[in-house]
Image (cartoon, rainbow, N blue to C red):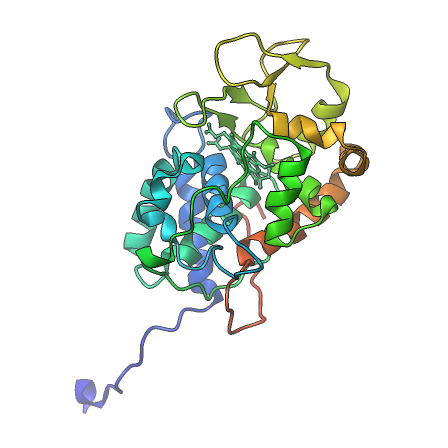
Length: 289
Ligand code: HIF
């Protein structure tokens, strides 16, 4: 009797509550280091989830978040990924605590946790990504080049399978975080509240006057009024291009519309190219719910 009756156990099958625990542990470490940037790892975790996913090519069906190949050189050394080691390292403590989760599920779930904890909408998420090896690394050049404009944006995001409205809806994520001279070479935040997701990116783009920043760094815009905010050439392209601009105007007027469309498009981004076995998506509780 007793111990000898223990049934043989299969591999651990995580369920929604296990993923919620991972979500909560990510939420807890977001503001664990006052010294880091604006006091939150949230923005850099959103960037990690996006750069892991945004390598997708719908024609060859390569790239995307499945695989977590940014763990390996050469992908970790691609210029576009500069600074993301910080994000990967921060998440290692969560991986150590929940070793059953794949890196590829962890990185995308961390982006969901960061967005929700920074006041953003609920991003439905499902597990199922498998980690790959170095042979699945994508070639350099799949992520956008911020010094370019609308043609480049369409080339890059159409390749992933997005349309104009989706490109603009995604772009509101630049309300979060900042550029770092030692990462991209650009400098500064897009909004006055870089750790809260709102439609401020669109409002500022339309309402402020912007001019070229006079400096020796890469070409970027600064707001004329305070010279403390920035826009990339790719951001400014969203109001130079009529087809993009009408969506910028719609999101600037209506935060609810932005949140709804952003949730849809960010969820789609995190799922590009992933061979899921389940249709069931989880909506995680935020710490403020
Ligand atoms: Fe970014 N992005 N992004 N980006 N991005 C930077 C930082 C962040 C582009 C360029 C840059 C998206 C699209 C594009 C975030 C999230 C998203 C930086 C600065 C550059 C240069 C990096 C650094 O120096 O630290 C370009 C050209 C894009 C195509 C439009 C997405 C829509 C907006 C897909 C997206 O979600 C976040 C968050 C950051 C802030 C990171 C930080 O460390 O604070």
